[in-house]
Each structure stands twice: as structure tokens, then as C-alpha cells.
Image 1 (cartoon, rainbow, N blue to C red):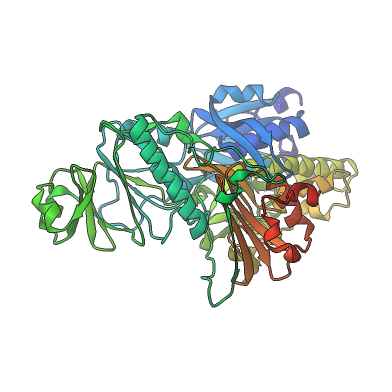
Image 2: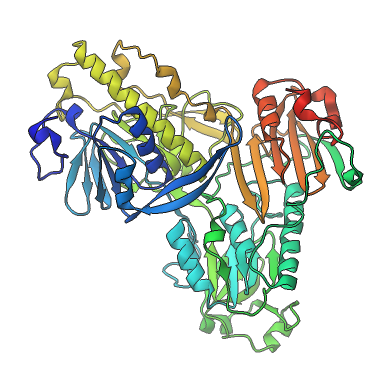
Amino acid sequence: MEGSKSSFPFNDVTISPSYLEFPIVIIGGGISGVSCLQQLALSAPEMDVILISASPVVTATTNVKVLTKTLTQFDIEEHKIGWLETVHPKVKVAQGRVVSFDPISSCVNLSSGNSIFYSRLCICTGATPKGLPGVPGAAANSNVIGVRDAATAAELRRRVASSRRVLVTGNGGIASEVAYGLCGVQVFWAIRDQHINAAFVDPGAATYLERCLKERKEANDQNEGLPSENPECNSQNTGHGTETSSQSTWKIIRSNVTKETAEMESEIFGSALGPNWQKDFPLQGSREGHGSLHIEYSCEIARLLTPEEAKVEAVELFEWDNEGGISSGAEAVAGGSWGAWPVYVLLTNGRCIGCDLVVAGTGVIPNSTPFLGIHGGPRSCPSDGNGIMVDLRMRTSTDRVFAAGDVVTAAWPNRSKHWLQMRLWSQARVMGFHVGKCIALSLQREKQAVAMGMVTAEDAVIGGGEVAPVPGEESTQSSGTGHVPTLNVHWKEDDYNVALEDDESMYDFCFELFSHVTKFFGCRTILLGQFNGQGLGGEYEVVVRVGGGEYIKVIVGRDGCMAGAVLVGETDLEETFENLILSGLNVSSYGEDLLHPGVDIEDYFD
């Protein structure tokens, strides 16, 4: 590029009329946006790139450890926005907020008034906390905080430091880790389900993890330390091929699930989990010692009350006594605690709890608003919080506009039955790298078509071509989380008779199997495939082994093939189970031996 073509196309710069001369534009400095940039540095280092970030800091992965073909463990770190210039040789950063975009003119408009033109656009704007929508008294309440990223985690740490009691609501990864990480403060955890961490684990695993949580609380009360690794989960692995004296501590349970005995799984979206994020933001309250934890099941927040409103409400008050026990009703009111707290939370079960702070860990919704309701703009999925619908190449319904991460709804046809979308940082990372490859190949295909005379100058001029038509009503397909919409995308480039050797690399293997590794209450937890029997129609077999610092659950479908697994603790079985799920091998004849510690399952199926 020479002369004006070498300048980035802001609205105050002379520009070439051909959109092929424009840079790739990435909107968002989160995990998916930065991962996309990192992949473009490998796949298209010659291309100019602009990354637009509303924040002065960006988020990247570090300490990446590949555990299996589909499972990767990593940490999260933040960098000042200028760090991006070390990632890609031709990147420039525009800090600002996108207010709208014009797909016909191939430009996005910033709050600063600048317009940036693109050859390819990638929307990686992530998601925002749901908060407490529809809860009276919650709007603009300074005593309510959501946790999503490092900035909100740091704010939570600051607020907790002066708190005596915190109420946590939500039952996903963030809520669980807040309840686990809080020290020196009384914790009241209100969940709408009948067991903890319902977004990720079944009641059996939840019971195991809850015991780990309470043991950790008791250990910390005795040791007077900050959150530590759970001793049971970190106990020495007994091994799967040797007989040891500790085998008497394990138990195997085998059961069949039928339509009559199982509640059909509903669509689940988890919060964007940051692995071990609470280590960087220790949540220490103002009380000496470690406070206490109470979990209230099968309830949600009905209202938030001011102290004045609480005095006139005929509600049952819940309170801690001096010995750490819990009292309610007249006994608590007699304690004279009305007005002692800045906010009172009325639950749907009629109980009321006073606290200093309410932490809303209720999930997230896609941050797609600036791109919706525009002629020729990308199609969204209203049933999924208006996530931008994409196909397997991360393409939206708008020509030359990609999207990835939490902002999208995975809407490609014929999705793998073992893969489901959950808004997790692990999936944002995979989508970011995948969309980077797809963008590079898309540009390569179009440039080759131009060189071969398949594209005329008129086709590559701003506004010179038609925006891809918005498809008709989408169809649906069955998946691990129920029925999801599908989107059939057709771009101009699909009509080019151009074959690229690397086309197959666009179909990333990580979309064949859902896999996620994290820690719950200090216990390493790995989820594989249809880990809760999602999409199996309520007909499957469950084999569970508990003991020796481990909880292992295997889901076997009616066809005898392994469909999913939950591994809590240092089991070293993730690669074996991943291979068994993907291979489709019938394992029904092995029964309980599948999890017997005396059977070396890794070597048996090697």
C-alpha cells in the first residue's frame, strides 16, 4: 500500500474506494478479540489491522497448557492497550465505543465521531452481566454489584473489605467462586435450584463439592488463612492400575435415567469464567476470622428494600447470632437488627436478610445492541439474548462481517451432538483463534478471485455491491441444550470458484466436543461432552465413583457409547474419556469396571 492507502481509513483521512484496501477491524479487547488478533499475526501478518477497545486495558491468555486435543488450561492476564502492538506487526489501536455501523459503506462509527472503514469486520464485544432485571429496588442500587471482568472483580474486592455480610445470588461459576472466596464476612447464598452450581454439575457432584466447600470453610476458620486449595481434592491420587489400601474409601454407583425419573435439561448458559480469578482478587471482609456461610435453596430475590421500607414490611427476618448460628422470625426481630443494614433482600420464600452488599452472579447477555436493527445488519437470536448468529466459519448474515465469543449464538446446522455453547472464556478463546483463521482465508479467497478476474472493480467499491440478504425464518436443530436456531449464510465469496488448500482448517476440531477445565471450591473440575445428559432425551445410564479425593461421573447413552463425563479432582482420565466419547466405542459391556480403580482404563483403551 502506498500513499494514502498506507494510512488507516478514519473519516479524516483520504481513502481508496476499494474495500479490499481497508484493514481488518476487530471490535473488542477481550479474550476473543485478542485471540483473533494473535491468530491474524500468524495467518495474515501482511494485513493492516485496527482493534477497537472501549477500555484502556485488554485481556489475554497466558500459561497455556494443552491437556488433550480439545481441552486447554490457561490463566488470564490484563495488559495496557499499547501491548497489542507487540502481538501483530501492523496493528493500530483505536480506543472508543462503537455506537453504530453501516454495512453498506463498510464502516463502524465511534462515540468520538470517527468512522473506521473495514475490509473484514469481526465483532468480539462479549457479554454484560444480567444483574437483577425486573427486581424492584435493584435498578441503580449502589449496594448491588455484578462480577464479569478484572475491573468489576477489583471493585468487588474494595467493597467487600468494609462489609460484614454479603448476599450472593446466582448459581453459575462466578457466584460459586464468590461464595468460595469470601473470607472474614458472613455469606448468604441464595440460589433458585435445589443444589449448588447447577449450571455445571448434577446434584451428586454438587453434594460432593458442597462438602468440599464447607470443609474448606472449617479449615480456614481453624487456620485463620485466606482461601486455600481443598485438602480432599488435593489428596494423592491412588492411581488406576494399582491396588492400594485406600481403595476401601471409594464407592461406585450405577443407575439408569429414564424420562419418568429425569427432569429434562433446559438451555444452560454459564457465566464467563476466569480460571482462578479469585486468587488475584482475595475477598476479605471486615470481620475478624472467617465468618460463616448459609445456602438458601429454591429461592430468588423478590425485592430489595431500604431500611425504612424494611421496618414497615411484614416479613420474616433472617439473622446470625453471636455463636454463628441462624435465627429467624420474632427471635431475629427481637435482636434489634432492623435498620442495621444498608439494604434488605426479600426472597421469594418470604424470608428477608439484611446485608452490606448484594453480588449478582446471575449470568450474562450478549453485548450486541450497536449492531442490531440496521438494514442489512447481522441477524440475532432473540431467544438467546439477541446473540449475533454465526455459521461454523464465524460468519454473520452480513457480507464480510464476522463475530466470535460471548456475543454470538452458534447457529450452524448439524452441530456435533457432543458440543454445546456456554459463555465461558475457554470458548471465547477457541472462537477467537478460529475466526482469525477464517478471516485470513476469506481475504485470501477474495484476493485470488480478483487476480483471476472473477471480481470487477465495481464489486469491490464501497456501496458498489449488495449486502447479503437477511435469510428467512431460521430453522431449529436439536442440541445438547435443547432446540437452537440455525443460520445458512451465503456470501458473495461463496460464488467464487476458488479452492484453497487450507479450507479444511476452518473447521476447528474443538467444536466436535464440549470441554472445559476450571476449579470449583479449590477442586479441579473437568466437564466433557454431554456432561449432564443434555440432549439424550432423558434416557441414559450414569456411572459414578466417589472417594480418594475424586468424584467421577460418566454418562452412557442408550446406544452404549460414552456421551459425557464430569471429573472432579486429579483423576488423569480426561484424555481417555475424550477419546472414548469421540470414537463412539460401545462401552456398555464394561459396566462398573469403567471406573474401577483396579482397572487401568487408560492402557485398556489406548
